[in-house]
Amino acid sequence: MEPKISKDRLLDMYSKLAEGKTIYKEEELARYGCSVRSFQRDIDDLKNFISNQTVKTGVEQALIYDRKIKGYRLVPPMRNVLSNEEVFAVLKILLESRAFTKEELIPILDKLIDCCVPKENKYQVTELIANERYHYVEPQHKSLFLKKMWELSGAVKEHRQIEITYARNSDCKIVNRTLQPVGIMFSEFYFYIVGFIVPKEGEELHFEIENDLLPTIYRIDRIQDYKITDEHFKVPYEERFEEGEFRKRVQFMYSGKLQKVKFYYKGNSLEAVLDRLPTAKVCGQDEKGYLITAEVFGKGLDIWLRSQGDNVEVVSRV
Image (cartoon, rainbow, N blue to C red):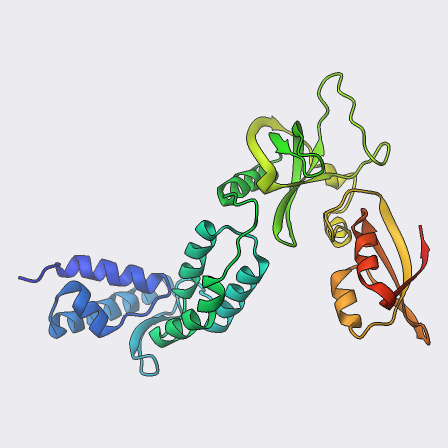
């Protein structure tokens, strides 16, 4: 008697195919402890089932044997999966971002690598990132935040106010805030939640810019506690600002007014400047270099301009 009955094997194998994975004969024989004949019968049953489903639903699919990878796969797959090239690119981005703790990052890496086919490509990708994975330096906050970020994103989607306890970066003071959250953003190592502050009764809030109608930005890892309330709000950015335009102008995650800067750039990589400042436009070029205008919220632009040294000459600032 075989260790696992045919019905269970079929369900397991079909689930695997549905996930976009490949079925390898030797691997399955070892896993289920069945005979070659039984395995082949299961494959034939799956082919018939998939063929009948095509007739019923009109969605054409087939179970084929791919000689290149020496395994069976569903064509087209039930759900789209990342190609090997896409998996490798995403892995590199995740490692270079240094946004996650090791505890949260490693499972993500492993799940992505599992998307690679055939098996040899899994080994190849694993080896290519092995050194970076071993020497990965996690962020200093060492905070697990994926679950927190996901739940906060739900508040953004459902337009529900949130109450947070937050450790400010400037003075490490703990503050309590009620927010109307409007977005989740990522920039240089950290994820942020963007929201409008709801003042408490009798509370006076002091901003760098009086009557500032722009949202504030909070690092999610610095949120020590949070509560998603049942209080709904009308989406502020429909009246106050365009989210897409706001995102283009918030590159450095510093508070402050909107700056319109015109400067000369005479470095070697104009492309890097235009990528760093999505609102940047080249107005001309002469012996001083490229004349560029850009709009950015906050003081971060000043820090970036100073970091460019002699490659940048500020012409005007409004």
